[in-house]
Image 1 (cartoon, one colour):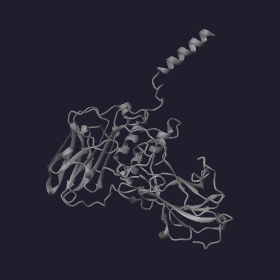
Image 2: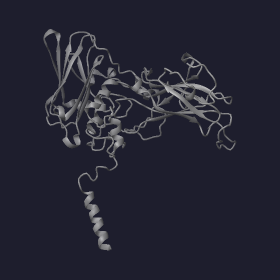
Image 3: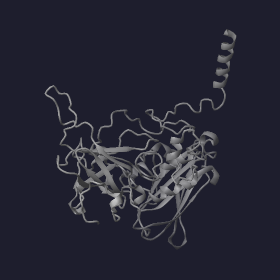
Image 4: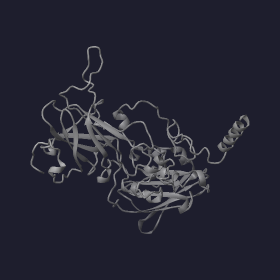
Amino acid sequence: MLRALKTTIGLLAMLALLPGAREASAPTFGTPGNTQAVPGMVQRKRLPERELKDDIPPSLEELAKLRVYDFDPKTGIGVDGFTLWTVDDLLNPAPAEQAYLRLTGKNLEHGDYHLVVHTKAAPAVEDLFFYIRYDQDLWHPRQIETGTALGFKGDKLFFGKLNVPGVVCVGVSRIRPDINGGMKLAEGVVCEVVFKEREFNYKPVFLAHAPDKPRNRATNIQAYLDPVIPKYYHDSGERESRDPHDCDVVLYWEEVNTGDYNNDGEVSMTDLLPITRRYGRFPTDAYEDSWDWLVDGNRDGEVNRRDMWLIEENYGALLQGYRVYRRPADRPRGEEELLTHRSSPMLPMSVHRPTRWNPTQRNAYRYYDDCLPPGGPAREFIYRIVPFNASDIVEGKDSDIEVRVMVSTSAVKVLETNGGKWSKETQAERSSFVRGREKR
């Protein structure tokens, strides 16, 4: 028996040393000072440390987003009125990476200008993200092409955004650097941009917007009665259960911000990183599926370059919370009321996005509405949930969703959810205790 036990222990020790045996260990994603990198990603300190604390509401100063238009030109690389800044995974300036980048340009025929970004004595970097700032009253970016500094087409993913006024957004990321390593060439071209000497003439994509379009509507919406009302207390300080005349409502929903693959609240070029780190993975192979499900944006069953189009479609969308509006179901939208933030009424939204970053968890929200009049017969209300960009005080366009609920002292029932255009209701779809009302 003792010999068999020793043999078993020896075999377990040998298995622990086999390649890949440690691959499924707990990822370091979430530790301060780390990128919270996807499993298999080469560990590298990219993001600033974040204090792990309770999810308290952010201040107005914390909600203010630093934009590329606010960057100091003196901190970038400049040539002929063009300026380049490298940024980190949170789109903050990262001047250290500019030490091995060069920016050159020359005039072409017919008023064109050829700008080249290339490396000089660069280490084996795995990805580069940078902005190129230009005068939009003088130049129109006509074309962008990738170079070979970080590899050929099958070695990397390249993203170039030309229709942001005054800015060219560029991201290059090596595919599976845990297997293929970083760039092989210390000197090479990262990308080339051709500008036309005329005013910016694209249909602009502004960075200051909230998630828009119907695909970014909140999902999995629920409503229920709050089981314990915190405003009723004994003299001893203990909390009582529900007052029988109250009908306080809790709304629950989950966020949607398509293209936000790193789950930081903003769709940007840095969302390439999760794609390249999980490239070729399947969200249904029962191996770290929570990582792959979020990155498989087009839901074709595999993480690959086809998931990049959602970054392009939703670029610049910043989600920092939601606004919740309420009105009686028989009143027009113009009479709806904006519900204030429960713990920080000065915030311009009803509920804030969790401040603690979790790269794989779908963020869920709850709003507790205790301002409904108590008692009385069953009533219907319409809640409207709208994605919100607090930094620029902008609501999502066409991404709001209306929820019709019926409230009584004993139950809350979601009668219908819709994107603001109500379909004709049938009697079968209505609850048996809904009061008679003209169909919309």
